[in-house]
Image (cartoon, rainbow, N blue to C red; front, side, top):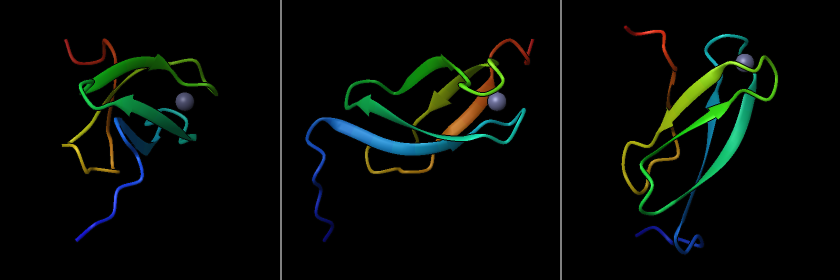
Length: 66
Ligand SMILES: [Zn+2]
């Protein structure tokens, strides 16, 4: 059994695939992905959760896949 302290928030970390900068993000429970800019290299990234309990986030560069 896993205790969850986050109520409606999912907290995870991601790594920028461009510069390798690591950062953290909080997503709300009904938010499966978010587009943001890397705070280090300013690349637009799409961070996607892999489920409610996932702490590992999938990251891809926005616009890279055509
Ligand atoms: Zn970056």
